[in-house]
Length: 226
Image (tube, rainbow, N blue to C red; front, side, top):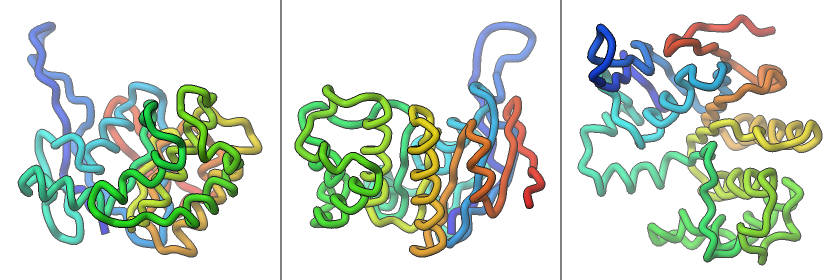
């Protein structure tokens, strides 16, 4: 279980009346196994900042992020990196594949960095489901934005972690591939027991949500869903 307790993020500055900008205002959030949590909001609302704090990439100014009861930001850097690799998989919004590796090598890289073998069979299965099976030997520089995004999703699924954090995973995709990705994320939660967190503009994501939130100006609030 991943839990945020009273976290906030401030960036200090030297302009205006205040000497800081509060990108994420104080909030608490729990991501439980077997559930999909969806966070809606416009660009600049604080969604990516929150996801980075949950994923161990950005320490909150205040509060704690607990992974199975352990405050991840109280850990030494090496231990934090190892814990992230074992428990947290992230689909970033930005381009994240290495140009010097093939798509297959990129997908298997996170597991192999820490001595795990990484299953080529699982990688091929996810790539096929995402419609990029034919690209396993291709290099990222020759891929479209949508293909790069689907490769990043396949990589996160192949890490076989209990928690999956996704930042706009359908941002470059058409309606058909958006539906495919959302179905795969739903199965990751319901069939594999993962805690899935999805930051998105995509209203279709609400159809698979167990919990849904809206973020605006760094504040978060619940959304009522059917």
